[in-house]
Length: 210
Ligand code: B1M
Image (tube, rainbow, N blue to C red; front, side):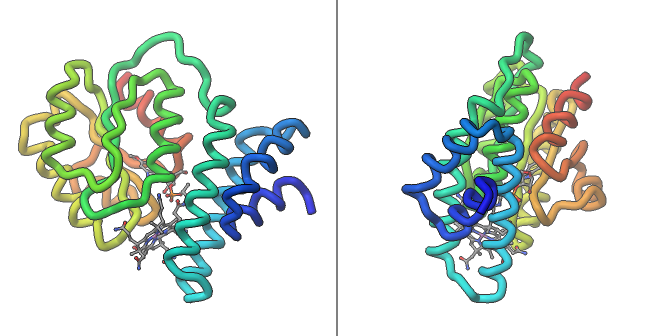
């Protein structure tokens, strides 16, 4: 089995204690951090499918999530390039009712790497909290909202609506994303853009404030 296959298997099986050592070995073998990340993301796709078909349940899904988070911690320094200039602040969070944060954390990491100061509000973030954070960070240029559940898409729409109603559309660009979010939906709810993955979100952040 290749190192990348070992990494995928460890995430799929939630081998929290083993992941650090396997990822370390992969780095020593010269495997790129982005390849390691892709292997872990693919593994989470497998886990999602197993959950959907009731082969596994929430506790197993959670162990895989913890394992992936640990793996990401190991490669994090290799993913983040040190930015020389500050492009302003990006406030980021996962919306009300939604506890998924692995994708949001990757988006935060990549946006930071693109030269933004990132203020991460965590998960289950209300419209009010997003608004407060935008106002309290004078140089806030972007607010990034992550949403992973179809059931929390209405909360995403409400948050965007709230940010616009608070008169903040002139101050910040609103970007939204997460597996169920399409470009059409982002436009429909009044966001300035969306991206499919963390690297594209960072590219979008750079171009949208330029
Ligand atoms: Co949940 N879950 N989960 N879950 N979970 C999904 C999302 C699901 C698709 C699984 C499935 O059924 N196949 C499904 C949603 C179905 C739907 O809505 N259509 C689901 C469900 C149903 C649930 C619960 C309701 C299960 C239950 O309790 N019965 C429950 C809800 C809890 C809640 O949030 N209120 C739940 C709980 C959990 C855990 C807590 C166990 C755990 C999360 C742990 C954590 O995040 N700390 C979990 C996990 C791990 C998953 C899956 C397996 C993996 C998610 C993940 O981390 N992927 C997921 C299945 C799947 O995704 N295939 C699933 C890896 C990550 C890198 O990708 O998050 O997509 P992702 O992020 C990507 C892009 O989406 C994008 O970039 C990221 C990086 O490339 N992106 C953005 C994300 N945010 C962005 C923001 C942007 C731009 C791009 O701009 C701002």
